[in-house]
Length: 292
Image 1 (cartoon, one colour):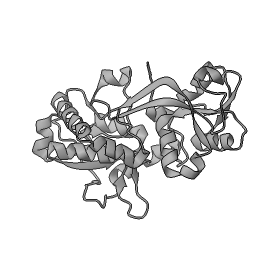
Image 2 (cartoon, rainbow, N blue to C red; image 1 turned 60 degrees about the horizontal axis):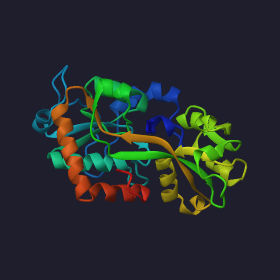
Image 3 (cartoon, helix red, strand yellow; image 1 turned 135 degrees about the vertical axis):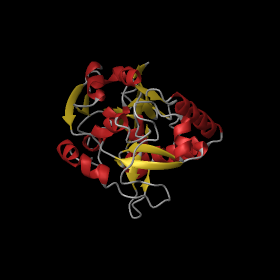
Image 4 (cartoon, rainbow, N blue to C red; image 1 turned 90 degrees about the vertical axis):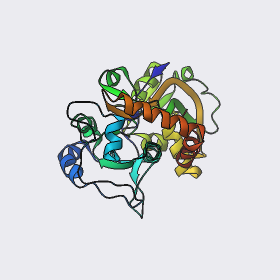
């Protein structure tokens, strides 16, 4: 089983994140001026984690402070974003971590920042935890503590609804796919023997597929589920032809030494799973349970 990064594979998406150059220039502004949530959950303009300097964040630290300070983007739909109209901070990750904070008996306080600065913010003690689809990999595990995964996703091969030829990754040999060159799916398609047309991201890939100009596109299952949920009419024209061996697991991330906090979060996630809360939140955003 090969673990891949959610965050890398879906980096280019139809909703258009702020360009990298603007992101670097605006990190400080966003960190200082994060908008307030309207749902009773604090999205503070500034703050710091509950931990003592140069140590992990303990459960006692968080409970003494009465809050769990959480780093998130706020621009990553459907995981962490501001709802149209109300402008409140919402999303799959936001709902899950809010439910976890409630189990811990503390208030979630969100610090919004760009993805490129989110680990630096955790390292600097700006927040206790990252909730932003951080995928688990060996490099990150060497530096950070991770909760049990709350998102599990496979790679999928998307084909026209009428297609009967592509039923496995090997079926892509000699076919044409469209992939972002910066994503891991580009190499997956190349390794399968496909001719890959380079595009900016999911929106272009799916447009070319619907126009019949390519045979397939390889992407993350969550991207496809989100597409089905938000635009079911358009999504009816395509289907999952095959599933890859790539599996990505995303978890909450804390600095090393946060053992007691992570243990408490794992217990909260287990309870939320047992009582159906995780499945319910998953269905709200994806129409499917992506927590397992």
